[in-house]
Image (tube, rainbow, N blue to C red; front, side, top):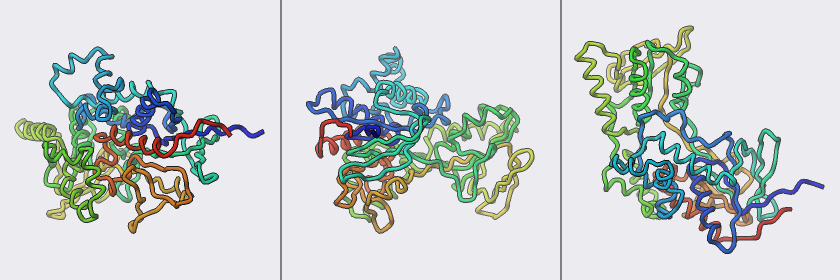
Length: 423
């Protein structure tokens, strides 16, 4: 007799903040609903983690703590950041701090705290390797873990596979060439007096530069970017309306040319920009070193890295000025690329699901984040991330996580709620 395949109303692939918010919404829904919605989440990592390599001690969040996993959906939730602070005995201290933006380490601890409260819904160390339609009404999700291969049957699939670190074409990561994602893991093997080259002009790049400059008091840190200087993020009140929940629907309904205009107008709220306080801090360091005659922090602006090559001692980096064309060779102990992330492509998992694509090859997605598929495919396939072309800048950001999770769950619950079963 074959082993029974568990059937769930909802199977989530990936368990970062987005699907964590969905798991919480599911838990709170089931606490009051007459008909329960069954769900399970599959995560390839051995435990919960969110950008652990960039949990620099003094780095802060770029979004308000009120845009946590639940508050915009349910301000009374026991899963809120304020409830976390109360449980940790820091609520009064945080209020006295008069700050909307907690330390990133603290917010990560909040996420871990919340994940532990829904631990019964998650299987860690489970990598999804295949999705296949069966009988027109279900999807078989094939998973590989230390115990072998298993299958979960889904009436609805929610993909939240996160972002993948991006390196420029031709650059291969080594033990001396890293993406900033691996920063904290890698620096432990280096000693003071090293030379670092940091490539990139965004928030992460500036944070890496500041961190290395402070962590290694005798090291030389060379920042390379094609802009004239770091550009400040536009976090003004009116510009921040692009992150409002209502803006998602407005973006979705807008004509293609308006969508592109909105992205172009407001890219400086999120992409390749830096908090003004950090820019000022870095400038103060550069100026102070000029006064003291000890320039450890060097800015190669309007420049690009044109070559990196391994040497017996480290990495030889050639930096070319975009103004003069002159090249500078830097022998470094490590090169850190803070060159951003790209959405994970769900295409390979969904090849057999008849997903519709637009003229640019992007998945067609409904307002409820459901992928448009062939009419004969009954199960719903939803995306958390990879929908910037349809839903705007907040596609993969924390700002709308709570609302997005609620909208996806509402779509699933409204479509069907069959009783749990095994086959």
